Length: 312
Image (cartoon, rainbow, N blue to C red; front, side, top):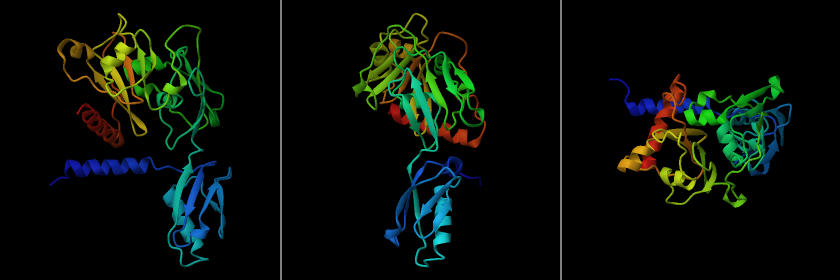
């Protein structure tokens, strides 16, 4: 008989975990412990040449290796000097090699580091989200590294309204995101609102911006809180972007039907969620730009389960 769905699903998750395994880089801080000889425990920063300095061993290559690979190299090398040590544990204390800079009309501009650099919108959320003066139709990504200085223009409004995340440029370590602004009026958010106690509301609504969240917050209440929809709003295809680990899950909700019939259930919101009300326009395009590999399938299945759990 063929493999069960559960077995296939577990295998897909295993493949995904391997593919996303973090590789240590310069400026990362690693914590190395030896339970068999704690006096050798150390915390050290990876130098620009990719090496770290350890007691007894001296210099050893770290950049480009996973934690598991570095553990194996350390044990292999140190066993020459001390046969008792057969195990070492490597943990990433600070993820500094994968950094993105955010400036302009966001609430918390600065440097942000990640284990896995997420998409542009997730980075902006980490920076507190766009301010009321932000121009979301012309965000700039300034490349670092081999393409240093290259500018990529991003229409964030269009991407959020269509849900086509394939339009996001893949962010690389050292990139700078610039959110321009204009002089106009809009909803403002006080500093104490920012963090895990807010939701983001954008698109075809009267007052887009950042809003506090309560235990009773739902899509319909959030839209009402933001002044209600504009005449061009497509209330049949409201998008909700929900954080799921290092990725986002997108749900499309027919708010118009709920308002008229009371079904399906009004989706509850959680801190950090983003509600986007699109324009009445063409056909709905694929959220992910097409499923092209088994890792995307695994993520998609996880997303379905996540939304189902949220509704319950």
